[in-house]
Length: 418
Image (tube, rainbow, N blue to C red; front, side, top):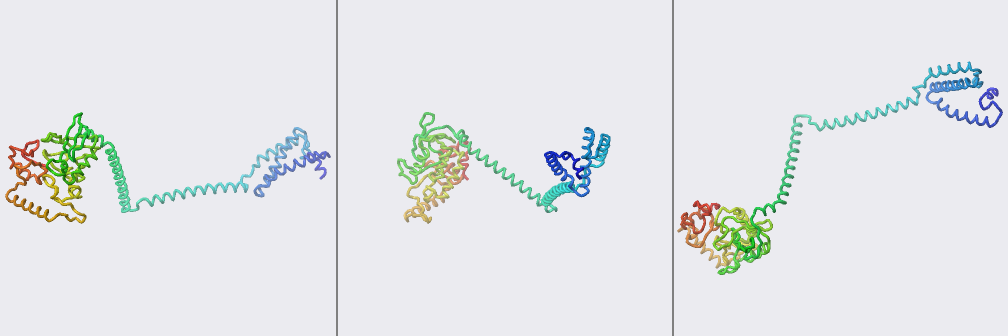
């Protein structure tokens, strides 16, 4: 044993420091080689050990070729070294590293298992998606019809929503552009210099002062030389002053531009609204003086007056106050909150007598008014036939003192009436 140790490199001499260094080197060599040798199964360990021995023999043979011998490995000369070198090379080539070690097999199994798990997860996901798609598909003709009906309903709803949005956008756009367009179409611009009463104003038009009588409307009197201030007359004047005083307006003509007093006959537009219609809407005027029909805004005015009448606003809050030929102060009675008329017995009798007189007159004649009496217009008649009879009794169609035939002169008057 001592002879064997003395042949080991590092222990051949009795020098202590060489033995220590050799011992440390061999320990590190064992620590590096043993884990490689003793891994895997028993067969793997044998294979690994044989490979380590072959490697040592190869290294010893190479050293012996240069040095001449390696007594530790019993390589006594270069011939033996060459033989050991050839045998170690053949042995190394014939004994490859074992590919079936337990660790490699475990790693390979784990890798295969992970790949299989991923594939199974993908297949499960695809199967679930296919099931969901299958559930969504109709499974019968009835389901198909219901499905198509739902789709059609959704599409119809979508189209309706798009149309609604388009209509709203168009309406908003129209609102934005309405005022400039309307202002461009109504007529010449002017400025109100003075409000005379509810239906008469003075304006500055092209540097000249004009008196304008509002077309197709009549408000109760406040400044008539032979009549007292009539109910709702001050309210109409106050409303006109509030809406028109000092304002820039537009003047729209329709039919004859002047009346027999030389006043301009026109619609007045202020802030994009027609003031004539505003008076009717508020119940501060009646629709009247329809001299030369058809008028552009007649139907609108009639509807506005009917709305005010149905709501009993202003002049329509007094029964009998509004008549065909104007307003009758003292004849009308204002309604209280219960809807009863606060009329005196004297007024009731007067109304009865007046009605009786009307009945008697109608029995003797079909004319509503005396053709030789005060001036009448289409607004004074209930039907076209009444106006036509009155027109003919007054000398029409040869004569038309009340100017009922209009501009066409065809002998048919007040054609806008029912």
